[in-house]
Every structure is written in structure tokens, then in C-alpha cells.
Image (cartoon, rainbow, N blue to C red):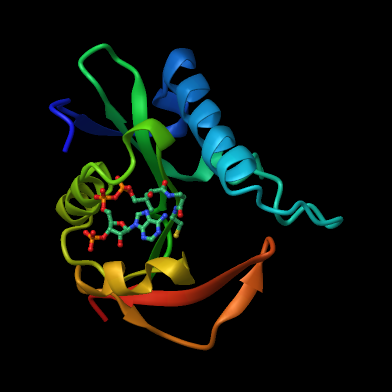
Length: 152
Ligand SMILES: CC(C)(COP(=O)(O)OP(=O)(O)OC[C@H]1O[C@@H](n2cnc3c(N)ncnc32)[C@H](O)[C@@H]1OP(=O)(O)O)[C@@H](O)C(=O)NCCC(=O)NCCS
């Protein structure tokens, strides 16, 4: 466990600072494009910067030095809510930051129904935090996923 502390906040796209937007996109690029090497397919479905960010609330977790080490985005204008692009900096993974971000998500959605397309390798972990499988496994961006829901 790292001694680093993390502070979470959430922001509409238009309220993000340029520095924070850059930090979010850099972190997602490191995690999804480089660490996980998600496959880009020709219809653009797996392009990391997918034009949906302007319609989301962005959750960021910062270290005291202001480095963004955790992020996710929340589609809050729909029911159920949906979230995704959940990533922790590879240098800080498995130190509890992801769990803290799940707690933070709970605190801002206030028990509203929510869904996500979870990477299958994390199903057992999400299940410990109240998420349930809803549907069959499918392949997205070359990786196994399954729809999971909470508060429904
Ligand atoms: C998934 C992720 C956000 C979790 O954040 P984290 O800070 O590493 O998570 P925590 O340290 O709080 O919790 C670790 C838990 O995550 C799971 N986990 C994290 N990385 C894992 C890996 N590579 N393989 C298997 N399980 C993993 C473990 O099950 C662990 O559960 P435990 O509490 O029972 O030990 C982070 O590992 C990450 O960015 N992964 C790559 C991107 C990704 O998979 N995003 C989620 C898409 S649905």
C-alpha cells in the first residue's frame, strides 16, 4: 500500500481546466492504449477519444502534487446512469485507489441505478461492491466485457 493520499473531484467537461483535461487524456492513453493495447477497429468504436467526453461528468483523483492518477467518466443525463473509462495510473494500481474511486462514485450518484460495460477480469472485484452481471459476455475492443448493473 502506498502512503500517497488521493483527493477526488468531479467536473463537467466545460469546467475542466486544460491541465486536467490533458491529465485525463494522458492517463487514459497510457492505460487503455499502451498498458492494455485495446484494439482499434475500423468503425472508430475503440478510438480512445471518442467524442462522448463533452457529455460526461469527469471524475479525477489527484495526488498532493496535482498529478492525476485516477479517472472515470459518468453519463449522468440518462437512466440508468452509465460510467466507464475507469483507469488508475499503472504506477499506482493495486494500491487501493480504484476502490476509493468506486466509493467516490457511490457518493455522487446517491443510489441511482447505474450500469457499465465491465472488463470481465474484474467481475469478481466489482461484485464485492454491489455490482451484478446483466447479460452475456461480449468482446469489445478485443477484450472480454460484460454488462454490470447496480441499484436496480
Ligand atoms: C481496474 C483498476 C481501475 C483498479 O484500480 P486499482 O487502483 O488497481 O484497484 P484497487 O487497488 O483499489 O483494487 C485492486 C483490485 O482490483 C483488481 N485488479 C486490479 N488490477 C488487476 C489485474 N491486473 N488483474 C486482476 N485483478 C486486478 C483486484 O481484483 C483487486 O481486488 P482485491 O481488492 O480483491 O485484491 C486499475 O487496475 C486499472 O486501471 N486497470 C486497467 C484499466 C481497466 O481495467 N479499467 C477498468 C475497465 S472496466
